[in-house]
Length: 117
Image (cartoon, rainbow, N blue to C red; front, side):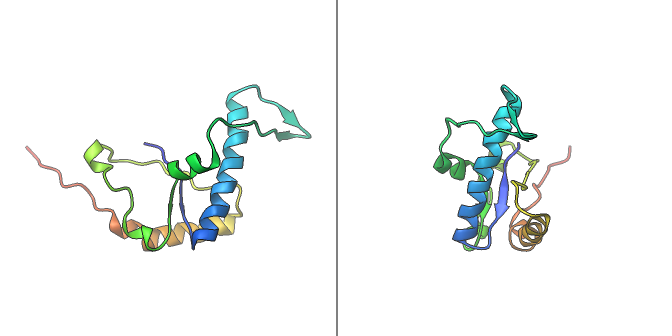
């Protein structure tokens, strides 16, 4: 499964990153679509999905939500997740977020128990 993620510092950081992701996906839609370019930059296209709907689809963890990541994925048979996390923020912000994710979110994931025949 592919799911966009961001381990936000707080609610304001989460809102900022959702807005960046929304702009990112408007440009991504153009890559898959008509490929309109202005001044060497991929032009954003209007989206059918609202900013609020995208926020619901992204996994953006911050305290206290960090203790409840991806509940139910294992029950759906999902055991691997591709998690893009760069939406136009600086490389430093991405690295900081990756450390936050590793420290605050990953410890709550457990490897599935597998029965061997």
